[in-house]
Length: 123
Image (cartoon, rainbow, N blue to C red):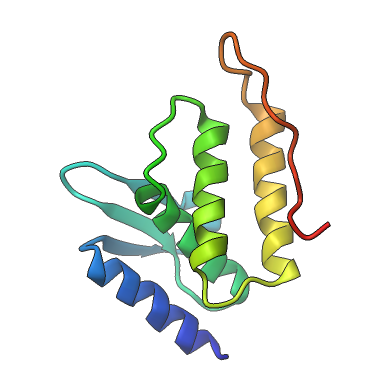
């Protein structure tokens, strides 16, 4: 499977759901907005990692998780990406796990809740 297949897959999913896509240069600028308009900003798909990031951003829209807990929303988006990607490699999983760890280390706990520890599906 080549990168053009991954890009084509992502763009077809977005077209099927009428999600607008804007390309950016930096994965840290990636985001998804859902509501009356659905919009994703993501790096151009040039590797497995940028494909994973793009699928993750689409997962924010498609997973349906509207929790007030940011970590829950991030997990749901990564789960959706993992389940709907044409392929999911250990390298992609490592990136997803690192992203979740960053959120767990930098965001406060939601009031009255204890977060579940990060689980690595490939362990």
